[in-house]
Amino acid sequence: MKRISSILVLVLLSSVAFAQFGFVKKAELEKFKDTRMVVVLSSDSAYNASIKEAVERYWSFTGTVFAYDTGLKQYNKPNFSFLVFSKGKSAKIKAKLCSSEEDFNGLQVLNKFKRRAVKEEIIARAFCSNKIDTDDWQSEMIRGVQMLNNYFNYAVEAKGELTPSNYPSDKSLMSNKKLLVPEKFLEMKGKEDAATILDGEVEEMPREDIEKAIKNQDPATMYYFFSLDEKNCNKLVLTSDKSELMYFETDSPTKCNCTAKDLKAMKSAKAKANK
Image 1 (cartoon, rainbow, N blue to C red):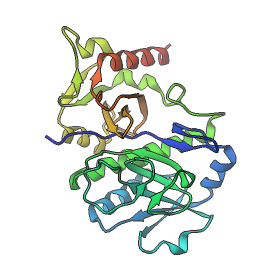
Image 2 (image 1 turned 180 degrees about the vertical axis):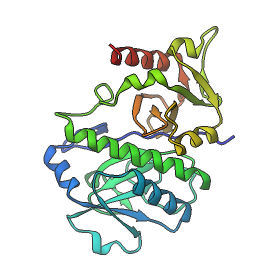
Image 3 (image 1 turned 90 degrees about the horizontal axis):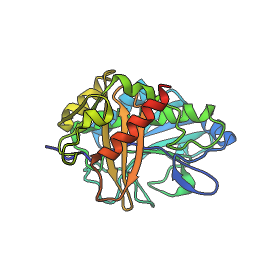
């Protein structure tokens, strides 16, 4: 079975700090919205096909143009932004893609193209799997593009910083969705029962089946996944359709399983949303 170590989480750059679900000033956000986003293609055909399809189907926040990484000089102007894939230090990905000074693996939106991005050039980003094979690119890019598009649309309406505690996606959606967890990553102790703790159906299944739910935009399910970096194991639960964020938490790099604590936190958020 393929090991799932993937996660998507958005990180925006503020004028002061770099943090998960960071803050973007309205003026900066409006400036970005007026750009055309250059979707940077590589020599990897599977990546190119998947990012093209995902952007064409799920991106609406800006205009777009597709260009190979060898022909970007004409676009390095203020009226363009760039969508790239950054490979993390521990990533097991064969495709020749970009990187970032800070250990990061996933999609990044930049205000200026560089093969090795620095904080000052990063507008937003979304974590992807630490391991991506040819067949995985489609579901990875669907999730990444949808999450970025969701975030920017929420940020336009937000009065301040979006954090995991106030992220405005509708948590009541959890009430009608089965939670899919990758095999061997559901950690229950003793007589603990996942479905009872969450007050909803929970099922462990192979990564490939979860990918099918994402590709099919299954409205009846949500899924758990995670991504490791040098400092954290980032845990998320997203809806299989539209990639709406239901849950986000960070833990130590050795603690990536979905636990009773995670399920209780999700149940609490669901109950609060349903009041």
